[in-house]
Length: 331
Image: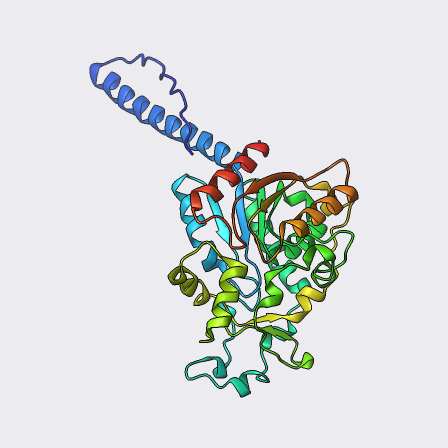
């Protein structure tokens, strides 16, 4: 965004010679140019400071790369946005040796992962740091998808004054139920297609939820496609699976992630309800919306329903349109 400022004129020089007049005129013109440029830059800076900064948080087993198309669309529209890599994800992810090709499935079932030590507090601390930095540049719109919603809750519990708006994109938002695990045991979650994905069992003491995204089992592929992106082509789903990471800390889903009414509950919020989501079914999304609204009846979710599967709208322009709507409420 840019600003346009009026450029005022310099005083008419009053000199004793043509050369003096010329020197004064040249100096005056330079001063006007400098003042005009400074005013224009100041106006532009002021306008940019008033524009929101989008901070995007990924879900389980994902990373900032998954937000790539949305970041590009927002950037092309002139917005500022950053996608975080939560601790143990992105460049910090760990890929077990047994996960590589050729895979050793027996070893994969027991191979340790450093992400087992990562907690929701670690996620929150990382994102709080990002929010603090982003807030220096403008109002922060904090966006989370899927499991990223619990990080939004934790961050808003800590720094509600630094967040202008929370956006849950078919994301977990515990309030009455304490955790993702509790929410997934409700009747509203019973139809989740996540339960139909052939599991990769690891011992509880390993402390990770592990998914073999590189499985060659056709039943696995079909179940994952149904859960995450039923309307995508097989080729698109295979691309998606190749950017996902095998491990997520089991501590995240078990952690108490309730939004606190006097902290999280102060921040305006939007829920992007994905009507074709088979992983977090619409009934479960609606339950979380109801419980959150009951927790803070004076600050209720603004709900936007989209015909999208769990991974969200195929067209990044749809994402950007929704985030722009949110941005307009931050003015």
